[in-house]
Length: 83
Image (cartoon, rainbow, N blue to C red; front, side, top):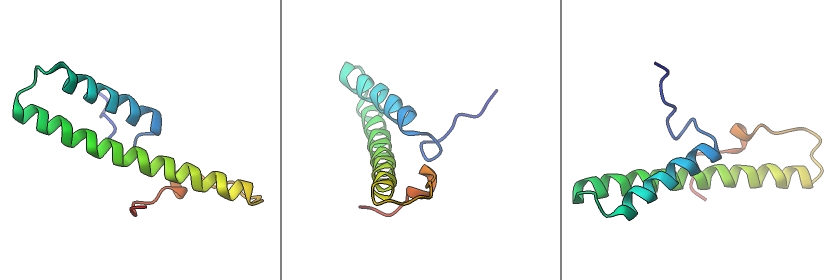
């Protein structure tokens, strides 16, 4: 069985899809308090990863607009530093 990628390894679309599923689970109202807290915590982590990926993409676009002739891989544009 293939190992599931962690949020740190997933691209934006995968992170967004997982975040949507977490929101759907929370919106059902069928979770216990502990399950809700766990889902919320997962959602916060996914949202943070999504923001990092978007920030990295924005930096990459800014470099391209500034006339950089060298392509910057998205993974290199993403940093773990908070904005």
